[in-house]
Amino acid sequence: MYEDLKDKVVLVTGVICDLSVDSDIEKLMKQTIDEFGQLDVLVNNAAYDKRGNILDADTLSEFDMQMN
Image 1: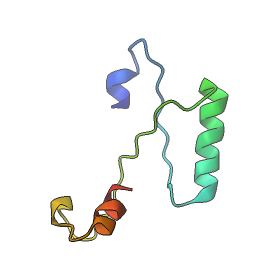
Image 2: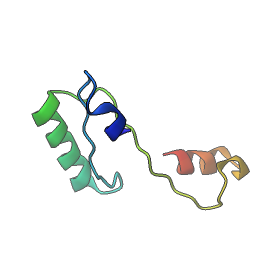
Image 3: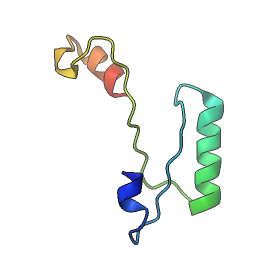
Image 4: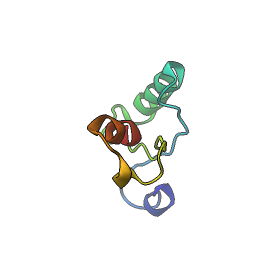
């Protein structure tokens, strides 16, 4: 996605961040505010894959775990 958008009129950046690590989140937010002044969109493209296919999730909590 970054490569597709970087030469367009919009301003984008890609950041490697583990959202389960508080210091990574703080670094992400600092970098974002320093560069853009605010956070407009956050795309988390990672997932927790316990069972394989997300459609096989038995409960809402399993679905939520995989999506968040």
